Image 1 (cartoon, each protein chain N blue to C red):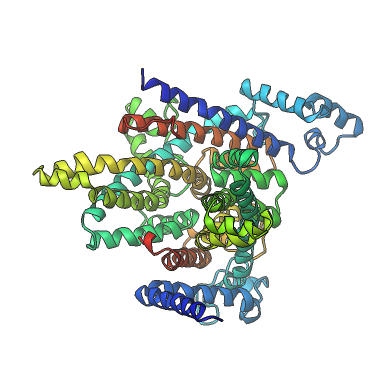
Image 2: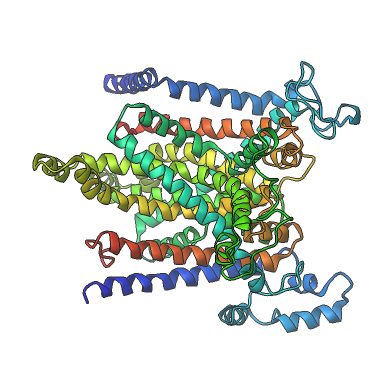
Length: 289
Length: 340
């Protein structure tokens, strides 16, 4: 490692430490993110009760020492279900965002680099997707493809696609003619190699911010779809469907059924939004709000 | 006549978008799980009757011909038959649209009435408690799932406080629906001079409208604050202040009018989210609008109704964006559409 590179690493790290010290909220966001990941990975083996085991004698008990978040109408432990649901909710949103990241990057980079009819065609398609109210389009896609969890993922990925494709297209397009790109071409690199290894990495920092902000939105979207009865089916533990089931009991005062999964959902979205804002401060200090 | 040209150009730009929307909605219709002909023929159908239905629906034609049939149906306003209600989808949607519009518009008025003053106050007093309140509301607002906000509001105001009526539809069953003129209960009951029904409808409306308003508050307040901050720090404000204009004149006559442009753009995007959130809020409050119609249709696998709903929403949204862009010219005569 050369001295200059060491110096650069050092200053990047310094910058991150500086931003985190300046903005403790971002630090909290990273901590909450770690908790979410832990719950998703180890949750199912840590929870005190089987999330699917019903017990009619213990139905609708308020929160207590034995059942921290109370029990639902079938006597299932709400705490266990909320924790176990973390994995499924994160899985759906991460898979959807990863899918739109990959496809969006490929399409956007190609359109931004080569331009022409490819660019024009892609822009038309993206404009058309954006012409739909996005949640409504997701409903339509799930209805057309069939009511399964995979299709929820595809639908969420499709409605997120324009954001990534447009971002990458813009980032690639402004660098297409720049000096380092011409230098790389003259050195004998193929177009594909220049695009993938020289230009695309420059788009990654703003993409990371977009991913983080998008994850929160993807969770909300997937939970919303399962709230109206799409995708996830009972008795599977998932935050959206748990709020939907709990909503039937809220009018008779059993608040814990809907409140805890809803709060978990909110916390997850909140974490990703804070994380996105924090990442933006690290990546692009000028756009701080 | 220089103003008319850009307006016509903008209207012409709608055409490719509408064509795209119709194509996507055609693809969604054709992607029905399983064989649509077998589906429409019913469970007891044999091979011959399925083939008959297929010919009747035009499903044995090649896809481009099917697309022409589809466009022809759309032009005649035919979105197909709903299996659950037995009526045509277009009639069902028209019947239920006023309920959704009443809810959405009330929510937007409510949230603009709160978010825009909040954003302006936060921008004029950076670092004050209003600014902090604005920031907290904005961050919390984007993280709140709409359906969860609705459930919490029902619990607090219906179960705990007992102020709100039960969250079941547009009007308590002891009242008669006002005679249908516009389909908006608030307007119809006033037209009929029936204030009791008007207040009853208001009471039913307030919680769902509040839920939607809380959802739309965040982006509007955030945009107003940012736009006002930018506008207040620009040179023409400095000049206006230096020229000794009154504070009120500077703030509203100059800064606010310029800040409204990005806010109006945001309103278009907010409306898109609101149309989606409507579906969730209508489900929570059993509101008989088109959102809950689509949800019922989804549950009953009534695909024609769902696709009709998706198409209607998309067209509504396209028209709305057009209206917003055209209001630009009213707010800001400098805008020309030709350059974009």
